[in-house]
Image (cartoon, rainbow, N blue to C red):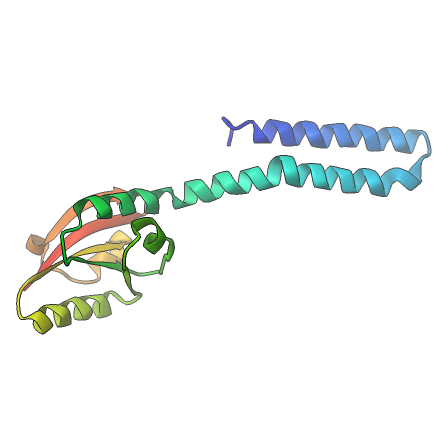
Length: 161
């Protein structure tokens, strides 16, 4: 935010409009106050709020974009991607592939075990989530390979018999 200059531009805009409103009050031009206030708000929204929202959103999504890039790099053919915990649909957008969302870690583990039984062979899956949610899956540590941590999220590869 500091590097973008948005904060300085917003401050200059508000100070400028405060001076303009003060001048209107000193010259007893009260009928123009509404216009000055609307202009100040519009200037703030265009110069500060909207660009700041875009920067904030980009930074908030950065960890998921990083994990998605790793998923695309390391995903093996037929390997499923599962997100445990709170659903982040943007992960689907960034990976451009199927992501199975399971809010309950035990259900995620059950889902993966059912998949392994269905094809009657061991499977591997990429699991994304908060570290504590992945730990709640109670996986055998020898079957978990930590691939990346970005922000609050962790990406692991799980192998199930």
